[in-house]
Length: 370
Image (tube, rainbow, N blue to C red; front, side):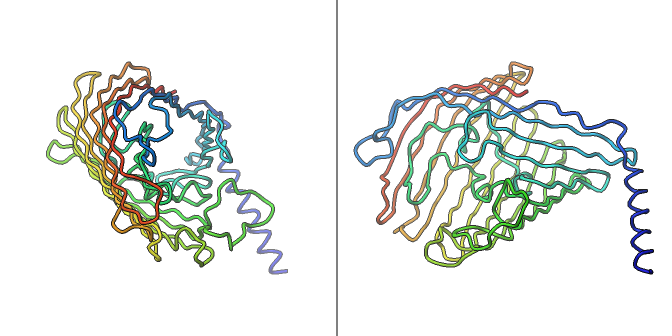
């Protein structure tokens, strides 16, 4: 009888909580997202047999499109509840929906659940760039460098050390800002996304990851008239199965970034590292950037470098990109950009299938945010 009374009391209490949490208005979804497109090509490229540019087009048209469905409502108790679903605007093999998550937020911060990047990636500060293109190519790359065996590509972003862990289904918490400082923590049981009932995921997937935890801290504010952005994040995971067939054992990664702004100038840089217990795939990435903006115009210079080491390497594979870009904000969420960029890749792999590579490319593009 005591258990029944306790259970009844709990149900009544839960009913009061639900009653207090009724929304004044239901969640209404709106549409957002972006359409990014660029045209570019190499007018100087290593394209001899065995080189990165061999048997590849010298120019092309690239696109990256997403449609975001999002909405939220504020409950009578002051909590905000919302959802976000990101649909790929182009066919993506096995991943037509990018991220999808729900959240509850209040004065205590925000709690998310669903398929989302880890907090280290989301809170990371990046180096500034002008327009559409940067040395770390967050949108597009027209280079063909790299040893496919060792994944040392010219388009490797400074976020690759973090984003390799993907949009696994996770629990995610962000704190409110305290004097410009905030922190976050996220946890994913394994590397799977698009999880659903019935049943749980297998725990012996070859090269699969489990127990993916991430923590991050960030600062955003102004010190002595200088705008400052800084971040530090770390990720740790475990490989589900041990063995020589796994691509990497217990990978971990960390990232730090700093951005400063004064007047029309912005300058910043980042450093990221990805390591595995068995040294099967380690890489370090750093970049710097500086921009100057007047009205709707901006110009920027950026440089990035990645060093990749694996069991195949005699020395680290090294890949660098130097980019000079210009941007113009048309307004209404439309940004135009153009850039000249040089890529230099030194292949030091023993048994790899890549070769040294050098190319210079010109590109122009547009981002429409909606």
